[in-house]
Amino acid sequence: MDETILFVGVGRMGGLMAERLLAAGARLAVADLSEEALAPFRARGVPAATTGADLPGRVVVTMLPTDVHVRAALLGPGGAVGAIAREAVIDMSTAAPGSTEGLAADLAARGVGLLDAPVSGGMARARDGSLTAMVGGDPVLFERCRPILSAMCGDVTRVGPVGSGHVVKALNNFLSAATLWTASEALVIGTRLGVDPETMLKVWTAGSGRSHATEVKLPHHVLTGRYDFGQTLTLFCKDIAIASDLAARAGVEASGLAALEALWCAARDELGGREDITVVARLFAERAAARDGDPSE
Image 1 (cartoon, rainbow, N blue to C red):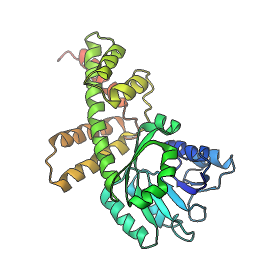
Image 2: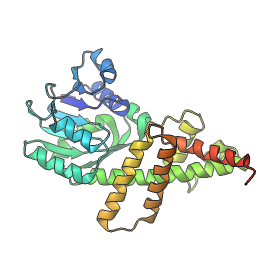
Image 3: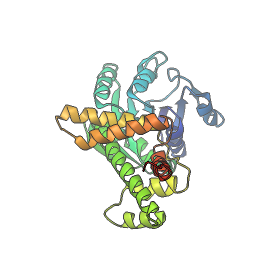
Image 4: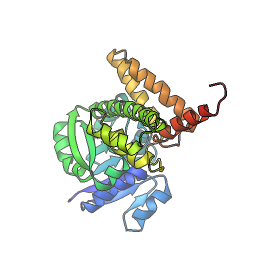
């Protein structure tokens, strides 16, 4: 790939995605507030710094926790869009669509195009380059940046204008929240009734109960006892809140979404925001075990 790219945010997911760009031959520079995250790239001679202002790259890719972090990394002090000319920004974070639209306008005033291209698939698919990207933005800019996206993602789909990628991603995470919660409950119920959990997951995945939770999250991150899918409860609840805001904006009374938001936020408050989302399955099992020893039950 004959491309110069500045990748901002090389944490757990971003670092894996940046590695895919290096493997594709991109001339890469990386920025991150964490020196620990930068260290593997520095060791390989990749230009690295805690801010992007002085780093090369015609295209800037961002993979950061929230839209506030994205704006600061691009337009704040030491921001990547400043002294060095940039052609485009690809924001692969999960952000609020409204803020993305505002950011696109501010970048356009500086002659820089924006694609919002959030991804789905987790750390395993980031590692092997098979993520799914849902992209919002100008179709010409999309085609210009498609090779960059394809180096990190197995499926790349333009879903509409700027902001559309983040709409689809928030709703994707709403669906993910529903299936992980309900599949975890079902797994605990069946296990307590004496059914082998691996057998249940095999049957559900072959039937109409199939979901990413039954195929990946539960067998690989719950039954193994690792609880390490790679997404924190804090960020997951942030994403569900974005979906709730979208429902309000669309004038849709989404009672299922509202109930899920309440359930996940309560789990976050009980478990701690830094815990992995798959820990809810352990929580359900622990609650059931605690009731076994409760004489009032």
